[in-house]
Image (cartoon, rainbow, N blue to C red; front, side):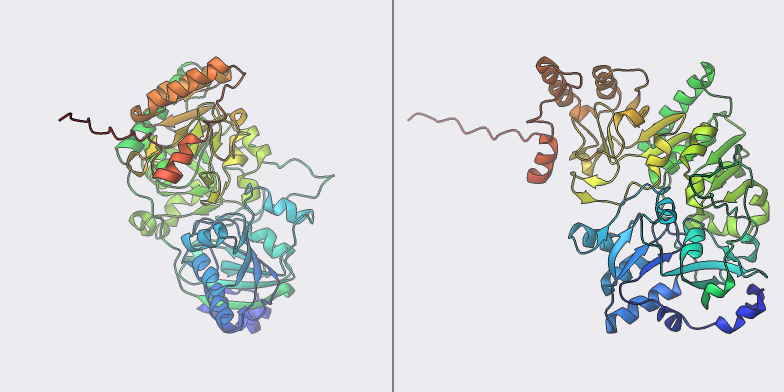
Length: 508
């Protein structure tokens, strides 16, 4: 049964243990591993490598598509294996090592990693470790639940290790569309004009002679930790749905809105879930990660097709989807991330981009990555790929965090990932600010009136009014611009602490 997954009989002799395969990874190497947002990562070889490094220390530079599941970033960090990591992560242990300067992290737009490898601006992988559902008669690799950067890692690497994961259904084969752009300066346009276009092959085309090891595994992807919408995220969704309805009424969007892109996480997933209660139908997606909401919308007859580069689901819906792939096969496609996130395609298709902000300021600048300007959270991911090139660029967040000690709307963001030039719409549970066609002073009024939490609104209005008295196209009080963050660092809250009233002296 296992050998049925390796249809190139000449590769049967390459079967080995994960421990044996990990020996191909040497000190100082650059390693490319499959995996995009906790889906489709190689599982056994990274674990074997982490155990080996505990006894025989070595350091590698690790690049993936996005984050890894099954605590692999944690295990590799704790073992001391990582000297460098790119382009995205979500693990708390790795995050701590990054912020302590122990692991050098390169935070990239997710469409750029492979392009820089292609042009030798980054060191190409010495070894690629790719999870597969099968190897074809030609020796080509059929990915599992993500494509990410796997195709190009396998093509560029000197040696390839394949993990065939028996926990994934063979029916995954045929779901993928592997397209590799040609080289500049003679590159032709990517021939994709519709969300459901197929332009490539169903497997990763490599020379099978590069495959040095094949490992069998039987371990599922990590479940998504997405939770059901709460009152705040439901309000964010309602504000956005109302905005979409008005855009259609004003003939600025088609009746089915155009292709949707949504970032990962609870807020973005909840916004997409909000479309279930709307009158919209025949929706399409051209996104990175296909989450629970994608399949809930398909099941409700709202979503007709979804293109992404990975599938990550909660335990609630995982079996429902993967045990019934035939139900969804004609409605899904998985692409390499340089295609799912391609700026040319985002602009051509007229994508509506919906991404999550860590914080944004009154002029529309967005921070997606750094807490108080210095501490890396996860990374920019693909939000920038879409935001700058979208038909409409939307950023969403709750207006406050940490029980109100943090305002997600600040006078000036402590780190800029998306400038005001790339942001059209800002939404919190308080309301929606449409910034299109507005000058900075007009934008500030919209943001303050519609997005700031009431507990912070007067303080924000006071800051803006005093800044306007000083003047400038984009008014600021530089000595106060980061005072909210400073209070948070020093006092644990952005709120101004009222000085204690000294007791009145009582005369004798």
